[in-house]
Image 1 (cartoon, rainbow, N blue to C red):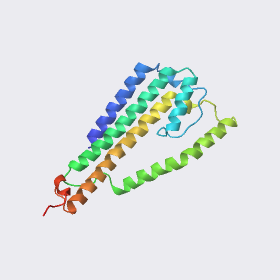
Image 2: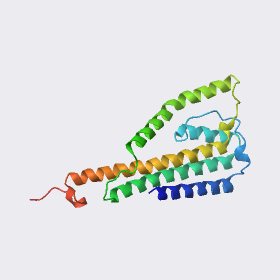
Image 3: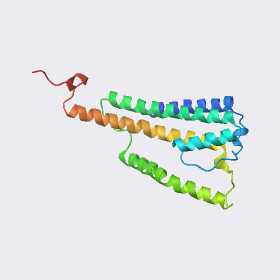
Image 4: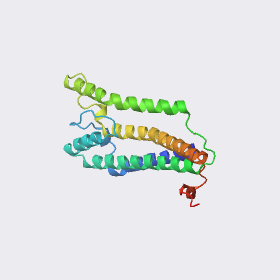
Length: 192
């Protein structure tokens, strides 16, 4: 399964690189967007709305189109890897877990930590901007930075989505078999 995940992520990176080369001027991707303020994690819809609004206000429609395309490709990758993991977990006869329990727990804790600390960190960044300590349009205002962080986190989330979906599906299938289910037709009540 690791090879399939790596292959899917490699295809995703190639698609995003092609989109960046076709839809936007690469040099422009490294120019900060002047009206952008620090925002939360890219998965939150508010963050994408703020970024797209800042790009539109700056007259950078091609980068807005690129950002939207990258978000779409990321959603496709995450969905495909989770579906692949669940499908392989249901098709597997062994019921073997691919993700060690400690690693799964660590991933879920880190994800929870990111979700819980995103707002305070953004508030701190905005406070530092307002006080003049941090530059108004720093690295976090560059579309290239946004796309790079989306690609990196999407690759990591995709791996864990596939492995967690596999393990959940394998666990469900093993439970179904322990309960006496031998196939999909045995879910009907007997007519005897």
